[in-house]
Image 1: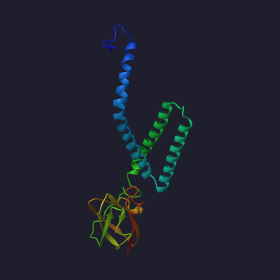
Image 2: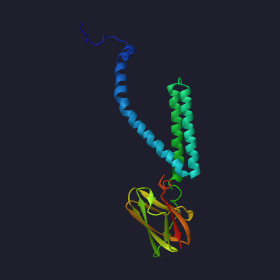
Image 3: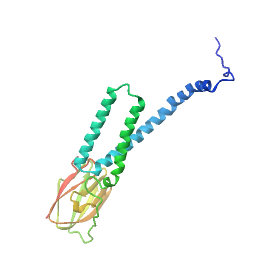
Image 4: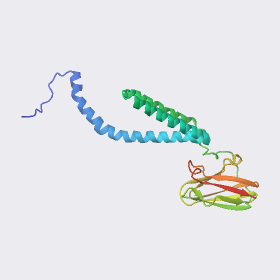
Length: 223
């Protein structure tokens, strides 16, 4: 049995020509375009989701972040339950639902962009470093285990110079007290700064998300 290689007969209607081309177009779309586009689009969507949800977390307090986590988690669970309970839901409806959730998170990220720039609880204020000589020098090491080398440090009343050294990883050092908002040291490799302290107890920590919760916090006692 021979296979005909003749060209399609002349005089085909437009509809018939489209039907002949459809299998080829579908093969190009499903075997070439989709396998290349889906991973790229998925990665970009994941990056946008993470960045904007992080901005929303950083814009508020710990309580606000917890509320956001609960709302997002409940929304995801409810959405998954609705989709599972309605298997006959049209694909377009599912896409609309997912797109709405994505746009909502991106919008929340842009709205909270300004407030989130200040870090977890401190930074971004109008701190002005003192210019006089330091009465004490304090060395703080940032360890790769998300800890400082000690849980408690001591300083002297007056201008203290803090030398911040990284033993591994990227870290910051800020004060929890609002009067020192804006004082921030960043490593690697090293950083140092002066701060005028009165007698009392202060809290220093790394304001990179997750580091303080992991234990990167210490008390600075000034006498």
